[in-house]
Image 1 (cartoon, helix red, strand yellow):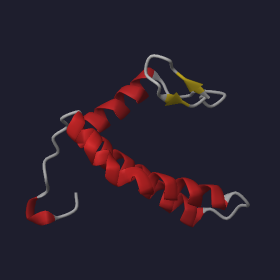
Image 2 (image 1 turned 135 degrees about the horizontal axis):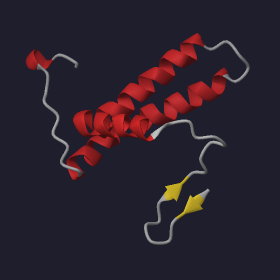
Image 3 (image 1 turned 30 degrees about the vertical axis):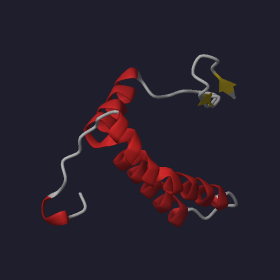
Image 4 (image 1 turned 90 degrees about the vertical axis):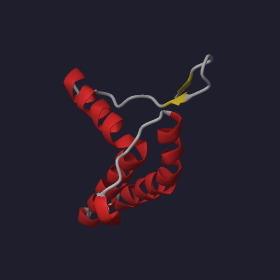
Length: 97
């Protein structure tokens, strides 16, 4: 665990091996710029819900905990989008995009 003095942000230790290439990170950053943090985290939460439903092992509870954690913070991410002035276009007819 690291907390930088100049920002007071918690930075977790990375996984032992980072496999994402710069182009993978660029694609993720582009997704966030296009859809915002709110929608990005919502999709991640839904992937965790799906993974929990498919899991059968002894650590299925970890997926439940992480899913609950991410899905709990998702609503607050809309303020991040407002702060960063990420403008999402709303779908027609109030449909969920």
